[in-house]
Image (cartoon, rainbow, N blue to C red):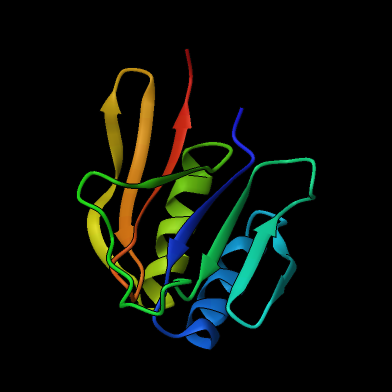
Length: 123
């Protein structure tokens, strides 16, 4: 159901360094883009995340309650993505752990304050 989600950034080069390295952990990469927007994923037929300088050229602002959740493939993947994001300069918003009987997750914010969740869910 999800084609892509877009998050605003203030420095496209800094954002690309962060997301290039982070998504490489999942086999993802920068698929296409132009100067102000870059699309990440495993292929154009799969859900993607775009990072962009806002079109209106105003400062990017993360929304209250907005979050991008990224499946990590298992608890070990959650732990690895969280550690990688922190090593890349993200800030902690919730260390890896069991949140619900079916949900293991971790939370970080990128340099622009965008909230990311790395998760594993077993129903």
